[in-house]
Length: 346
Ligand SMILES: NC(=O)c1ccc[n+]([C@@H]2O[C@H](COP(=O)([O-])OP(=O)(O)OC[C@H]3O[C@@H](n4cnc5c(N)ncnc54)[C@H](O)[C@@H]3O)[C@@H](O)[C@H]2O)c1
Ligand SMILES: O=C(O)C(=O)C[C@@H](O)[C@H](O)[C@H](O)COP(=O)(O)O
Ligand SMILES: [Zn+2]
Image 1 (spheres, rainbow, N blue to C red):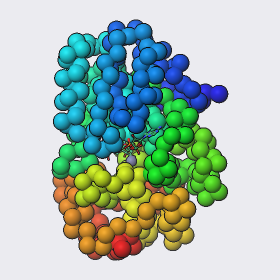
Image 2: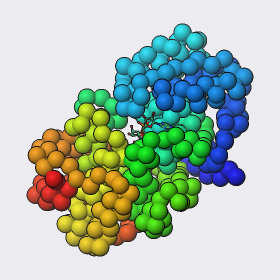
Image 3: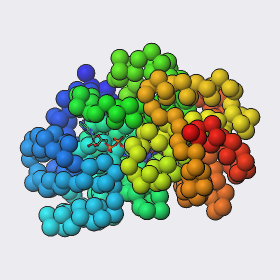
């Protein structure tokens, strides 16, 4: 059974969730004469199998794995490959992999000839529920996470649940952080399912999280307001990733960031104690990290200043005013931020 979830907006598309979706790719490619398939080594066989079923001339591009591939230098190598293959505006970029590869593939597609079609074939939990949906594409730079990129919605998204069988357990756990985020900002049923047993409810969790994201990005592609809620936990999370030079898994950093954001919500008098405590409990139950280095505060505060939600010198955070009631906290005092950090510092 294939579930089709619609994403609205000026350039609507579908997210397909199911098993064995390879047969859906040619339809999304359409009559393109050339297709570039970006993948990293762990997904080589899957990418080759998908490429082999396409009628178009395929340019395979193997990129470094995980965050090591999400760089300007790797994007430039991809542009060179597209140039050599004579890629035109009717050609298509496909990204096969987790969020790092699909963010890179989307960025290459967004920047090539100022924008060609692209299709993420998501193979990680995090990619399925978050990275492949919504058209945020980009790369990391030394100054911060995802600081260079573009909004460029895909032609469609394939989430083949069968791929999750080979996903390393740590990466499955990392993906749960974004699933849990969706539970706190919009769909508390997600939290109940994770509290019971996430692996027993994977399909429902994927579908629920995709629906949360699809609803938000369908009304606010460019993050002019409502979309900011998807950044819950990300202000501190991205700062941790930067401080760790992108060696921490995104979902792990977001887990700590979610607890920090919940504590910030509680300490600013906006969130009740029980809902704040539930963050730590559900993230722990999923096997996610809940603490970070005590001595890191100065670095983290500096990194948070380039968060995309900041405006000039004012930091802005997504907080909760209750379960599934996200809001914005603008310009909190540093003492408040420090107090929230003390709750995750180890
Ligand atoms: N664009 C967005 O809206 C958005 C949303 C959330 C996260 N992100 C980005 O996504 C990235 C994180 O994505 P991720 O958690 O998928 O990490 P990832 O892409 O680094 O993948 C994690 C690891 O799992 C491997 N892998 C993936 N699928 C596999 C499979 N089926 N079998 C075996 N190995 C597999 C990868 O090769 C990699 O080693 C971050 O860069 C984050 O910033 C983007
Ligand atoms: O799609 C969004 O919007 C999100 O914020 C989802 C996040 O989970 C994701 O990590 C995103 O890449 C963060 O975007 P950024 O703009 O803060 O870099
Ligand atoms: Zn994220």
